[in-house]
Length: 443
RNA sequence: UCCUCGAUAGCUCAAUGGUAGAGCAACCGGCUGUUAACCGGUAGGUUACUGGUUCGAGUCCAGUUCGAGGAGCCA
Image 1: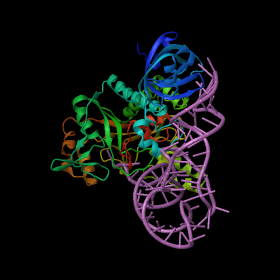
Image 2: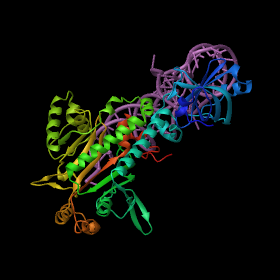
Image 3: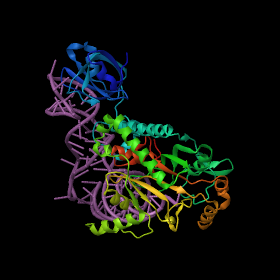
Image 4: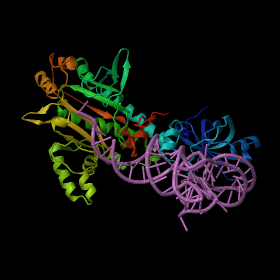
């Protein structure tokens, strides 16, 4: 019977069979140590020369890295046994080689980014990447399972969208028969149509931004989940968001402890991620940034933290601000001028709007962006005109405010940034199986 | 788009303007507990590309290409 490696501990003392690939090998004379991975984990398989026939021993001794194999042996607990989860190893009785692999380019040594990215199709086999992408899968499952359990209806939004009303500089253009279409960079407007049919909805899929961004936080193709709720104001939105994000983090923490250990993640920093999250108004954030700027040691940092009311935050501002907290924070009430046209202004203070960005701790930056949407048709039309947007392109969107308009809110959460934060990695490119970046379309 | 840095063996990196080197990986050998083992040996090079300076260029100069880090951009 074939046993998955992550269930080895249940079979101590039994004879089991593993199917997998040779991750690493070393030998000590009459003893060969094989690290075998099968997708669920990594297990040490020990071949003693005296316990197997000569052909099996020779085969094990010279087997190249990443060869595919089937190995049978006795499971035994041994605290010296490395692996994931580790602590159990296989005393090999027989070994069947499916294929002797060609010389494998990725050795268990350090490599440069370019080399690893060129070999992304192989790199994903490495234990860190394997762990990271398993956490990603858990995050994606947690997203769906929480929303489904709370009565949200998953409603797909189109990836191919008509010629954008606003600037198209950050949209990917594709041919659509005789016209042009653009790859969607948000499903939000369609979500707003969907809530009037289903009340609480979400879309979840890839999104595309042709930004020439070259930072550790940007991909040109990334996954985003966008929940949208009818009868929901900004305060209710924030409560929902903190429950949602906390659930995602706690699910990863409980289900991927082995993976997070492989990544060397400080688990205590994830355990504290529970509601409520601190709320900071934009006004207060600007004041705090002024204080932080005065405390800054060097001129360069002081220059990066320059801030006047009305400016959008840059990466240095987000990093400095979030370092004051050990949980994600909400920054609410951004200036309307730097935010999208559809955001509801504060009553009596139209220069700020009911927006909320969630900034992750440890400098990981914005992981959600959301707002209460304008529900009044006249105000929406006014804002569209103010921004110089073509009314015709938004006809259906304005329609939504004419037939039973209600206060409603929603947000988008970036999967790769969330995974990068949970896993404690440097760059979002590793949080996607095959990341698309400014200079990267292969493999 | 801007700033900074980089490109030498399959990989990670050395090399005053004067014979191109090491570690790892590969291959051969040794070792019954390895954790990126260790020890001995073998093989491995159009120094990103184009041009220039020089008796002589991996090294200096100019341009190009590619990459990295950061900024900007990110309704």
